[in-house]
Image (cartoon, rainbow, N blue to C red; front, side, top):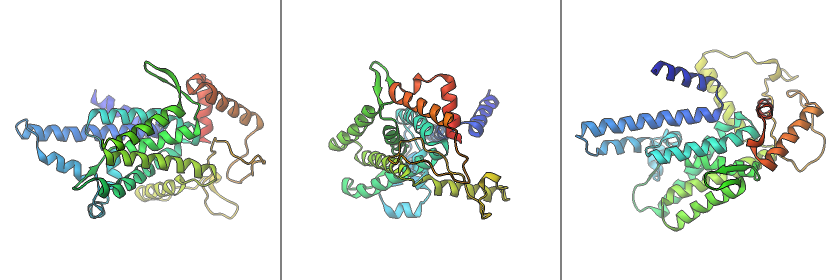
Length: 316
C-alpha cells in the first residue's frame, strides 16, 4: 500500500499541475510535523513537550528582524508549515478552489511564483506590524497569506465566476473575495490573530499588484522562474539544450512569452514576436467564447472538451 501511495505522489509531482504539487508539499510537511509532535508527546509521558514549540519556531517567521536574519530559511519554510488540522484543511481547500481558477487564466507556470511572492509580501507586512501589536515574541506560520494572494487574483480575473457554496448555492466570486477580506478586517478590529490578519491582507495586496502589473505587460513571475531554471541546471550538473523555439535571431536564448487571458484596454492588433507563433482567428474566437461562458455561468458550466481546450491553451 505504501508503495502504491508513493507511486501516486510521484506521478502527481511529475505530471500534476502546480496547485496539486503545492498541496502535496504542504500535506507532507503537515504529516511530518505532527508525527514529530506525536513523538514528543509519547516520550514526555503523554504530556505537552515544550521542545515541539522550539521545532515549530525554528521554521516559523518571527516578528524579530534579527531572528529572521539569522534564520533566513524561515522566509520560505513558514508558508508551508501547518500544525492545526483546520488551519491546514481550509488553506488547502482555498488553494485548490482559487488556485485552479488563477492557473487556468494566467498559466500554470505563474502559480508557484505567485504563491511564494504572496507569502513573502504577507510576511513582510507581518514583520512590519508585529512591533505595533505584540509586546513580546511572536511567530507566524501557515500558507494563509499565499492563499489570499490567489483569492484576490482570482477575484480580479473572474469576478463573475460562480462558486457553489454548501447550504447557500451559487455565489459570484467577487462577493466571496469581499467577505474574506472583511473577515480579516473584522478580526483585526477584534484583536483576533492580529498579526496573522495583517499577513493575510499583505497576500491580498500582492495578489492585486501581481495581476495589475501582468495586465500592464510586466510579469513578476519571470525572474522567479528564471531562478528556478538556474537552480535546476545547477543540480542537473549539465546545461540543457535550448529548444529551437527559445532561440532568437541574434542567437541568444529567450524564453517564449506565455499568453495572459485577460482583457486589455488597447484594441490594436497583437504584435507578432519570433518566439510565439500567432494564433488563428478560429482559435482566438473559441477561446473568447469559453472565457465569456466562464464569466457568465462559471467554470463548472464548461464541458469536458472546453475544459481540456482551456487547459491546453494555458500551456501554449
